Length: 322
Image (spheres, rainbow, N blue to C red):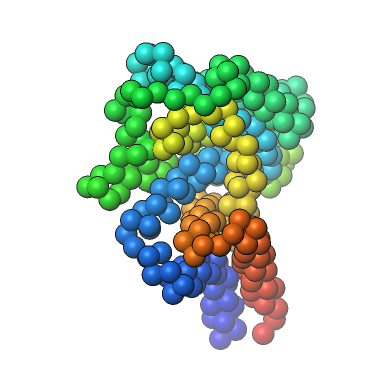
């Protein structure tokens, strides 16, 4: 009987964030019925895509116990390289591959600086972020890159909706999420990341190359951040070297919230998506009810604290003997 009660507590704990997200949605619907409209729901989902894809990439690095401070600059780099090349008349696919390849190289540099040279990950990626910021501003002239004749595909990935309802960008997010979910939870190679994050020193005794796993995480993170930047450029119909200025804080918020869902205490794909949705639901709802900017920040901060506090209390309750 005690085991049954413990299991129920654990289940409630694991899904408390989702319950909290639903409750917040209901509150906003009561305050502003337009919140639940199909158009607004699709707007919320669409606005979640960019940071959610980037956070899925960053989660791999954080699973290994490291952090990529260059994620915002990588996001901006993907957008700027694609926009600059596309505006210059370069074939869209060539421009896209070039942007992703550049981001992959950046991720590789991050990995080499940390795993081969021995520079702490946060310092290495912070240094790289400054260099990237400079390069982004150099190729864009420190200004917004805009064109009145972007290619159809450039516009499609961020603005087109299938059947006039479902954004193409959401389909891209679903594909990325499924791939990362299978990689981290269904493949031995992906599960090694958790082993590295748990105890990288012990990995060598079981045949896991911690440096190799971290290298892969940094590269995938940079590529997904670059892809997120490209989608963002399409949504805005332009690119700017300043796109990723607040990216890191937003991604960390989503990841920390996500770690309270599904697999409590562990960065995971379902949790990251729910965390990203919660953040965007709050932002969207506050705008719809006409809240002022300072009120939006205040409520968002309070909601985050309440959500995490709730999950923490549930975890403590689950651990207490009956």
